[in-house]
Image 1 (tube, chains in turn yellow, brown, orange, blue):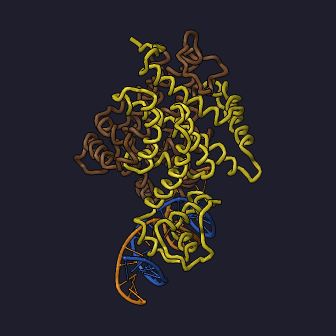
Image 2 (cartoon, rainbow over the protein chains, first blue to last red):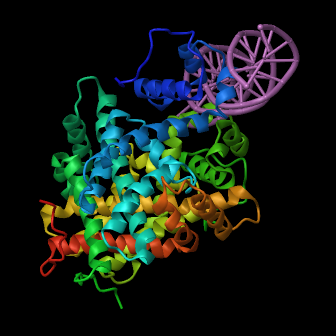
Image 3 (cartoon, rainbow over the protein chains, first blue to last red):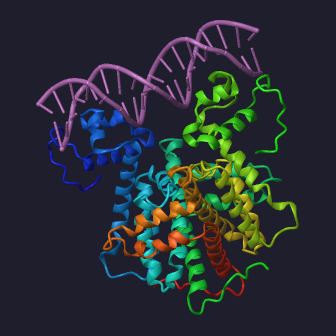
Length: 244
Length: 244
DNA sequence: ACCTGAACACCGTTCAAGT
DNA sequence: ACCTGAACACCGTTCAAGT
């Protein structure tokens, strides 16, 4: 899958943190979060648990490193060409993370878990930096950088998590159940809710079935971008009046 | 804490799914997600694991039920008075979930986990319904209900998760470390990042330290609301032009 | 129908011992 | 400095047996 220069030598290769993280990602990709165990890891790396603990503090740190590696790769594709218009740059970040969770279904849960662990986790600065540079380029006044960037990051991660689940869950339902089939059954579940308690959800059940994840993601990004520019940029007075 | 009619009878009380979920919430509140074990649960309920499995399929379902119970309580406070203006209603939902994660620090991670499990989980329809009714009341055309509601829900859950972590993590650092202290150390961590890789993050480190969680949450809600109304409602032409 | 509790398979982590 | 692998404490879950 990865275009990595893996030599033909197999078990003689020295153990390293990088090699361990790589194996962890492979296990996660193959069998989800439950597939990453120290037992499976020792077998794949032909070593004992103590060797792994020499390079890695514990399982949580290992999961964090795997998440970070995948996110770094996803965000690295951006700035090779000429600088995008800021709006396009934000969209690219969102789609990059979307595609990464599509390739690594376990990533969505990890992203939200890490994010809700506080701002140290290395994924947080990484994503914040990517989005924030675009916010700055947008011309948002410096005092509002944090607020605007936070809003975008929170939205993107929430949406990416949910949307990735749609395809990931489809695989759970069976080998040949595709995303459409999953959304179809989810839509039916919504339609069977109590009409008194859930009139709105029932009313949008068909829209759930027919929606496109990427369009949905980008629509939300545009909502936030519109809100940011309307509030902070010259000429934007389309402000929802606060209730008095 | 809860205004529940708990009789003085203690261990004679019959076991029930409701009683089990209640005990699970208590354990989660007391010791976090790691505190919920079947061992601890059997001890608290003075029973064996088999008895619990009679009422509950497995631990995951139990966690889901605990999450659902807490979310239901948080969303139930709303519609007693006269109907709010829709914008205020959305803000109330966001603040309600914010306060709930403040009382139940384990909730944030659960919310994102459940949400990224797909649209069946009972929390999803509940939150979707609460927000969606306000979107409808806003005058958004029916064809855009799903898109607009999804954007709001994704944002709210992302923001609530992150913000709740700020207070929850503060407790981890020590008994008398408050939220300000936690944000202060997080802010310092941001300032110590590599200036070449993270110029933006370093520039907003002070804003991270000084920001108010609730203001931040509501600012983001307003961004999304502004974007929705600008796009879908008469008179809103403050539309960011898509890059050509 | 509801509950008991011993037993099972499996997990993350440790650590004395090796090289 | 780096690795080995047996051992430990703990976990979710099962199930034959009771009432």
